[in-house]
Length: 186
Image 1 (cartoon, rainbow, N blue to C red):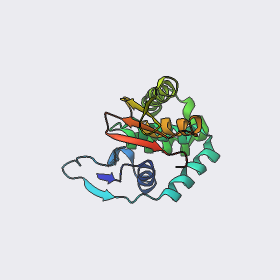
Image 2: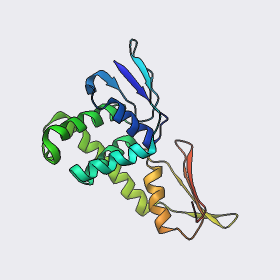
Image 3: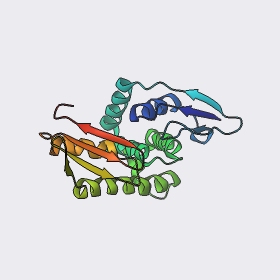
Image 4: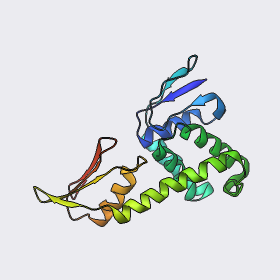
């Protein structure tokens, strides 16, 4: 058993997926958060995040299997599930075997576990895009506090970057002690 450790970023998660892609999902541990207590005889494997390879990987998946495939992998990452890595690897194996039809095998154990988890993450992202409220703070800026069940700060921040791009804002995930800041440029 190998435990694939990464920096906890989406790029780190995708880089770890690429490193472990040819292995049996049952024989690896790949936490979405990047860190985990390895099992007793597990071998830790440190994976360095490679943003270019991660972006290329997502683009290739989108071209081969459609835009839902990379979205599902990212939703697995955002879920912070202990099973995120093994589900993602098993899903990639199913895609190689069945192609885009893999999503239609709803009774397969991997798809049956993956789909509700991705739907819950997607539902919470959608909910916060519509219900997140900002308050004015000094200096003139907006601030929103949130406590989502899933680690969805990034996709929600990207949405508000487009929606409130002309104003500086700060979005804080209170539960995870993380924040996203937009200064109207970056």
